[in-house]
Length: 401
Image 1 (cartoon, rainbow, N blue to C red):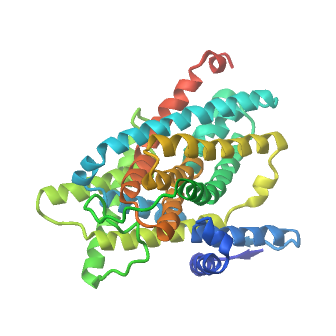
Image 2: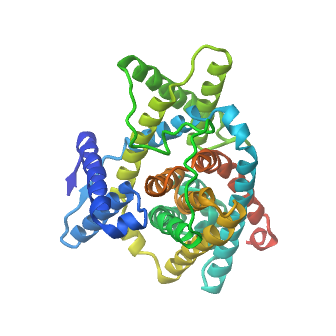
Image 3: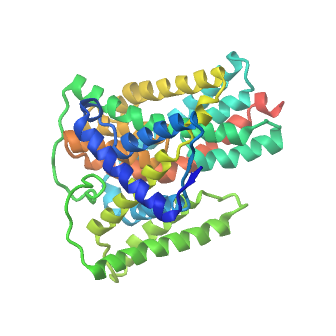
């Protein structure tokens, strides 16, 4: 057993990012299908670690920084959300939210139906639906406890983590190919317009940005305040009807800070610097999350459960191609939105951003996509998902269990 401490894990994550960049630059397949660099590097390392287990060699990472990095990323999403910009994209946000809600309903219906057909507990199908796929590890952990305590579902926590892990991997793998298919088939092109709809940091992560030590500290302070206040808000909401995941609270505080300080004329957020810190947090979070994946947990899934998750992946791809793309306008922005939808429809919002970055770096900018996906994928989806899950559990089918 090799145990890497905080510093060793940080070095490993940095090397994974460099490895991912090298792979994408040199392997035509990865580049052609817009596989995000953290996904390419992290997944390769995870596969190597899986192979090493056969020789009884194991590596343990210190993942203590993973959650702070994720929260810092969501804080920067909030700090980048300008109300005046959101007004301009308001209709698109609403339409995309309706599309996302449709997927939640489809995922749960598919999960329950397939689980029943395969002889599994229907609750397992619900667990392998929007709870873990659109909800991610955090939502999966929360609901698995409910399923174990209230419904007596055995190994609910383990199944939830395995499903969420499966979704994280596949969400980062299918988004780029889906966008490529849509762009090539419809011969789409980016408008390339530069507008004030959105800060361009997350859209163009490799753009050089001038910063100073003082401005860096200012932005770091805003992120730190968002993390602290968001964590306190999460603690205050625990056990209430308004309970939300910590990252949603952090994002909300970031939005309030950004727009409150601006409205008072006290401070204007340095968007370029926010985007730099956000992209660093995003890249390191994904690198740590993917290189520390326990792929052997996925290999241990029973065949019927694996079939269920594979079907959910296919449904996500088809939904993105035939629903998300068409409803959102059949244009280049819609194709980028489809890639982002694959990211958080199976995995998480950071995966969605990475998918869209991989696509826009190859085909050109899509400002509306980088406005809509972070807000819907990081904020609204968790609220809607809770409502959808509770509606399914209120069905007579589950009430009788």
